[in-house]
Length: 136
Image 1: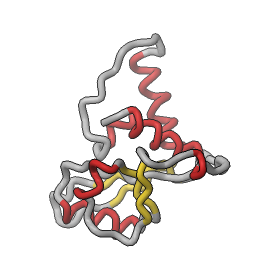
Image 2: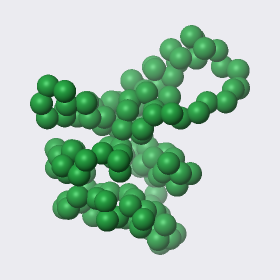
Image 3: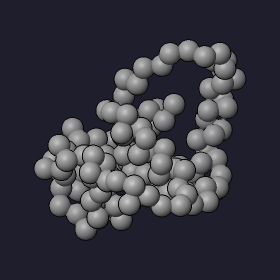
Image 4: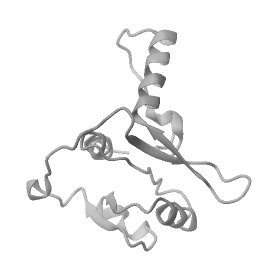
């Protein structure tokens, strides 16, 4: 967990892309399956986590070594575009990716605002980014 992680996730969304959160505490074979199944073209990580990643055909971009030369013009994010893919726990076999579009995430936020109100408050992320409720 870091500010870089949050910034990277927001940058992906702003660029019109989708992310697949990979918890470095997950077993290597699970991460390998998620990368293979999702066909993720890129992995954004930091140098300290590089050795914990399974081998993959994805191009690795190191957040702590990427400079402005890697910046790109934002894409066109749309409500129907995919925002992220969360993998199920896999209790019945191999984990399955659940594709969540921006529209679904926005509806979730609106429902939470209706339920909890919109007054500023303090929230603590207590779950892994690989758990769906972390989006809140």
